Image (cartoon, rainbow, N blue to C red; front, top):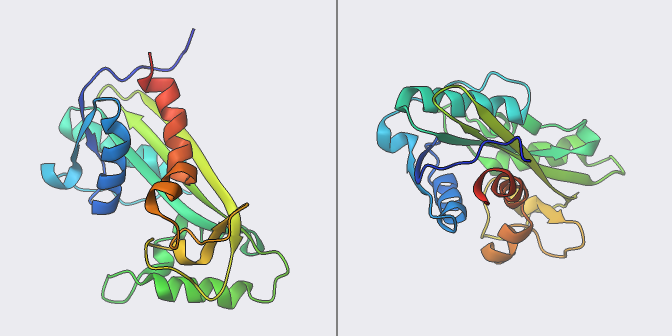
Length: 204
C-alpha cells in the first residue's frame, strides 16, 4: 500500500513565474488531465530561496503557494553541478548568472564554470531537479531527479537554456542545447523527477 498522497485535484498552481517552467510542467501534467495556473497569473509572490538543498527550496516555494492560494501547488528547483567544483554552482545556479541590473546572463555563468574548472581532470557534471507537491493543509510530497554527464567547452547549441549548451549527457554526443527538445525531455533531470512524482501521486 502506497503511503504517498494521491493528487485528485484537476487544477493546481505552479509556484513559478518562469514561462519555460510553466510550459514544460503543463505539458507533463496534461497527460494526466491536470491543468496548471501559474503563481504569476494569480499574483502570488515567490519567496526567497533560503534553503541549502533543491528539495528545501522547492518545498519552501510549494508550501507558500499552497497556503496563499488555497490550492494544491507544484514547485520545482533545479540546478547544474560540477564535480571538480564540489557540486557548485548547485543550488546557487541562478545566482552565478545574476547581473548588477538584476537580469541573468548564463554566458557569464558558463564562463565562470570553465574558468574555475578548466585545469581539473574530472569533467563530470550533472543537473538536478526537485519537484514538490504541497497541499493547503501543509502535507508535501517531494521527488528528486538527476541527469548525469560531463561539461564541455566551448558551449554548443541554440535550443536549450541556462547551462544546457555546456552539458553532454552520459552516452550522448550532443549537448542539451543541440538536442531535439522532445529527446532532451525523455532523459532530463525534470523528466526523471516527474516520473517519480507520477508513479507516487498521479497513477492509480
